Image 1 (tube, each protein chain N blue to C red):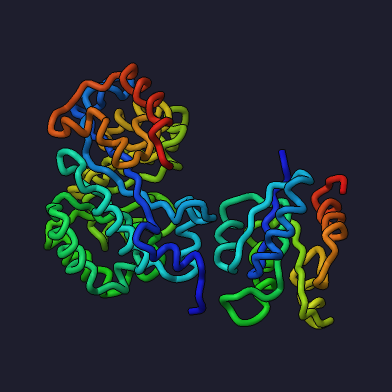
Image 2: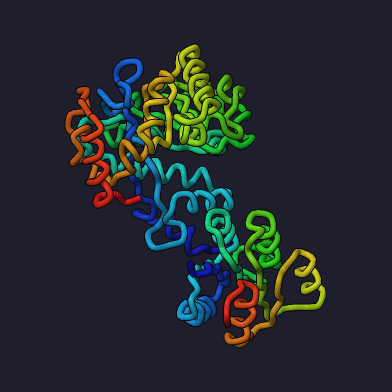
Length: 285
Length: 125
């Protein structure tokens, strides 16, 4: 490969940075009529940002670039290292959800051992890690992919499947990967309060997750009514801008759900409004 | 809203010259230096116009034509101009076959390039 300025920047020590978006867990079946009620932090999804002041600072453009370069494995490992490094010092040792391309799981035989070493170095318990499989193009059917998932599970790492309901994130993928978490794509969450079809999909995936011994996560919640709809569908793991935008580690440390992560807290609509008004000043991405 | 323009060239001086000329004339200009970077931008940002050098560092061959093909497929609303210092009639015919809107030789006076860009994006030059 010829020299590339962008590729060199990605590989610099601070080339990639990480922001974190909380996934909340609601207590009880519906979390109240408004979808509010008792919530606690379940995990933080690590979201990678590219080198600052470049065209690839935005994560969607970064990973489009990386996929076109066919360098997903190297960047996934760099992103994981960045996430664990930047999560150091967060109160309560929260669970971390780390995005990994399916192709990385197929090509990187050393991933589980490498992750175990890195987690030990940063003092992160392996059972607090979730590997979230993204971009499940055909390599996921390979033997290394499934072997890596087994070995990760053997270490105590949980497996999540991203974008359930879209593209390759289908029933076969669910059966092969046996995920602990099914992350329902925002396409089905957004507007679900007004769309019986979307609501039916949410209920169906929630029920499927339950029957498989997994849990469903509703992503992309930006509306109180969709929050209530997801909760009413039995989905107790929730993520989206309405609840909390992606935050820098420094901003996260100021959040009350971080300082008392072991306790359910009453987070009503007013508290959420306060939070969402406060966040833009602290948000990186 | 300002028309958004993507300029793709491996020469920093050309990127700077085009940006410095077009921005004061009401365009929002993004610059990319390699094929994959330009493809990633075209995949996520809606551009009115793409101005691409024929040859870019990174891949052997006429990457500008590859980029035109990509733009036609993934960003069909984007009008396209290819600039080249190596143009032959065969390459020009290939570019036209791929749907390029204008195939121009380097060096190209910026005022003429701006007039063509304005025509393609429906603006006054």
